[in-house]
Length: 175
Image: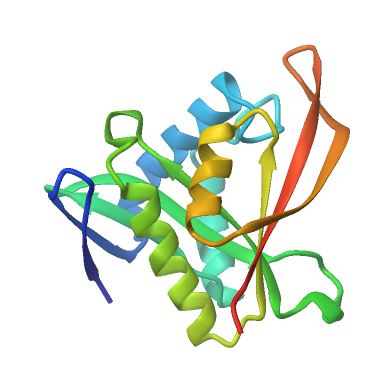
């Protein structure tokens, strides 16, 4: 099901379920985040073929993967899955959201997050968690505008690009 939103520039953005044809963009965003940012604390990107299984697994487990499309082009994606593997966490999800560089700052992440939060509420999820590198002030600001609150900053729990990274944990109640 597709939902229409407006970006900051007023251009319409359509948010819909990810399809296999969208995975080249998802992979490119992953590679960029792994190689050039601290958004993903991984040093080697997954190969493109990994994402076929990833999408199938998310679908089989009932977790959404959605994309934002502007003028027929995928501008970003978002997804969530269970925060931790134990049954007691089954109603808490952790999400990811990534936007193609040329579409950043135009409200694409907000549209994706609004759709993702709506989906989580419809599914009866209780809390959505964001785990963000503490230096990513843009993402932290986005999440604050969406109603997330910082519940912890965990110092030096990750390492990438030769330096220790702090993790900001943010929480959005859904119920």
